[in-house]
Image 1 (cartoon, helix red, strand yellow):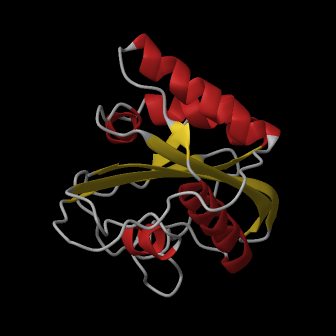
Image 2: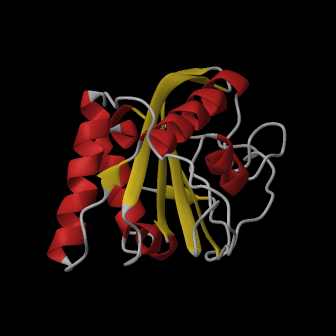
Length: 196
């Protein structure tokens, strides 16, 4: 499988512009950002999960694959958190409906700001860290296993999945049309930790 990567700098987030000119339908485009932010505030902690979480079958499959490799490497399983799930689904859906591929929202909002807006806040925490992987593909390159394999073959994407301190996760999948090509599948993986 030929990969087309759009990698952002690990360990910090940055504003990026939409991916320009991907021509091959079977190419899998990837993006990663890892943001670390230590917060020392005296505000009350916003609940990370305010709603029940109902995962789709592909989201459940992705969670199982991620937790399998984490456990295999002696890491904690990631726990699904409503705020991260809502943020990741919203981002995948926005990328489909607005026709772009980037960590920043179409209005320029960083992924870390998006996670805070959805309730995964550093308020009341002594430490807060988040990371994000995004990908899209179609046909065989848009399956859960293909996207997971591509992330695992990319050192920067794998680093997000293997970040030892992460404990929480949200996985969002959306399907639609991108640049006139139908059947494109987008995945957003948001991981994080909040320490008190």
